[in-house]
Length: 484
Image (spheres, rainbow, N blue to C red):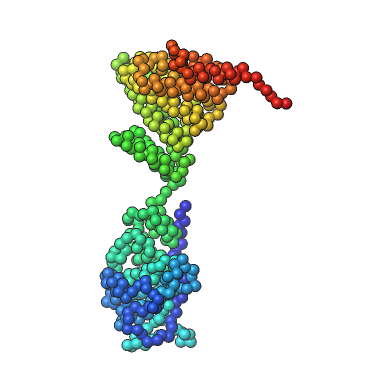
């Protein structure tokens, strides 16, 4: 959550500002201690030249200045970068320009107009001009803090901020200083630039840090880039899934991309909810289409009914493919618990499938429909048998009990069997038998008897069935010993 504040901006009182008696003025425009090296005379002159003047006076012009400002690093402030602790810069400024900053306007109105002769504060007289000397302590953990303050002070002399504020990094460097000095025009220019351009991940972190310092109206556009509501991420993911499986012409590539987004999504619970929502929607369409196909309304003419039946089958086939993709994503992310439970509670749906697959009409319309539905079943059943999805005993019982008859109907009525279909059905047989082996003896006894159709002409061709019955009889004849 990013904090915001609607309070009026207040400066952070981290400076010491006072008027002092001074020694003779230096002929240099910028004077600094010997140890200072972050802002040279050459760089100051170059930066000043880049700024378009807004008045006849110029930044750091000693001949017309009436304010001498000493910028220095406050050594009482804890630093992470100690190499700047000795920075000390003197610059020549103009009071009429400084008043663009509300901070300096307040300072000058209090001390410039009514100096107190009983204090150490005083004016220098030079060329018949009164010179005010101010000390400004800079507190920062950044090595270029003095340079940032100098850049903002130079911007007081121009209305053209674009020549200086030309990157997000520069805007983020200058914005805290502009806020500190209550230089509203500069604040607006920085915020306007930051809002209008892309950010790197590092810059985004810095934007989040500076937002609480802004007024509500200033931070509104910046905040709009972040989550406007709690479910924004889930809504976006759901929309991407729907686009991938329904609308996009380049479906395979888009599905692969959305699958990667789901894998990389930070919240597994959110990905679970989004996939469950899409799964339920697709399953509902498939069920309704098969229900209408299995129990048609024949009040229309024959051609109309046939057209509707073809549409129902095509709708079931299309959404069945979507369903299979969703099941694969849920298993991949290990969030298929609800899907397995939902799939095990489809007695009416499996009855419609049995009726549909016993009919011959679907063969020439959607010959791949049984394989698509059974692949969904096989994926979910495999997840249960492998333990990647833990299902309760009743869920396991119902999963096999409801879907085993559909498998049997598919084997008996889908002819001739394609090699891919044959391997699918054998895999599902083996998976059902493994799940049956996890059930209590009474449940497994009932279900195993329904698996006799798995047998083949050659007993050696159905080892999975032989193993399942051998396991059951071994357990049935094993003496039970209860320790007293």
